Image (tube, rainbow, N blue to C red; front, top):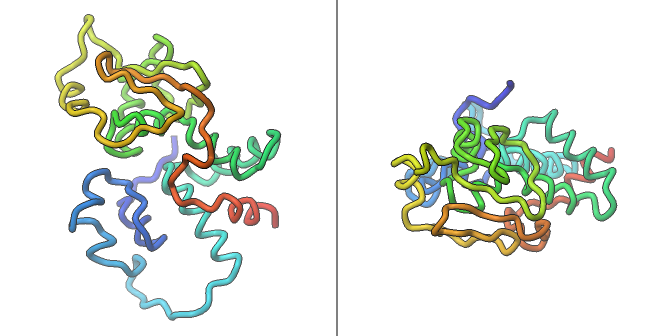
Length: 209
């Protein structure tokens, strides 16, 4: 399975803004954007007016980096969104938000989507009572996501991770049950609630050329 293995902070520097790929570290002075704002590489880029294509490419890469999706899979999501009824850009963001690793992150069970992906890969979550280790699994309305218990109890590291929930606001399309360490998909993600700062219209324009 292909995956990005280089430092994720390079992705933030490439885009030129914080994508919050490393959780709490992004809010500290140790953040790569705070230390080095220029793009990665030794060459000093010349200042020139960005073309429409480069702006659209930047927005597409920003969405890819934010959700941790490679190009081939991202293009697949775009084709799925184009086949659905509704605004293609909005449907694309709804599909990305419905990924299991993103839902785990949105429920504040993990500090970052990268950490959430690892936890899902290791089989620490169930969907409707069944173990699920596929980060790209698309949840549906009514699905219940919970930590996988071992012999009736959750491991100690899970108790550490979930201490003080919720650590950040949970979107309205999700319901968090802190006492039972589980969450429910209450509705389809509303594009107006997705606060990633991604201009989906520009992504549609990029793929429409």
